[in-house]
Image (cartoon, rainbow, N blue to C red):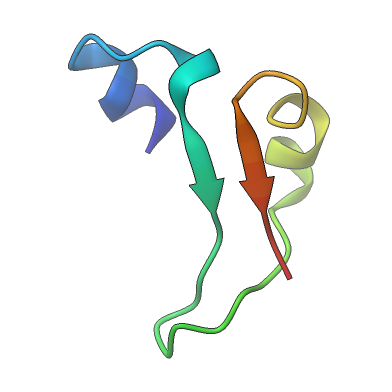
Length: 47
C-alpha cells in the first residue's frame, strides 16, 4: 500500500494506516511493517 501511494505522488507523513482483515476487523501489522511504519506515517490504527 505504501509503495502504491508513493508511486502516485503521496508523502508517507500524510498517510493514515489502518490494518484490517477481510471481515473488517483490526489486526496487527506484520513484523516488517512494525519496524518502520510507526513514526514514518501520520497515524497508525491496528488491532
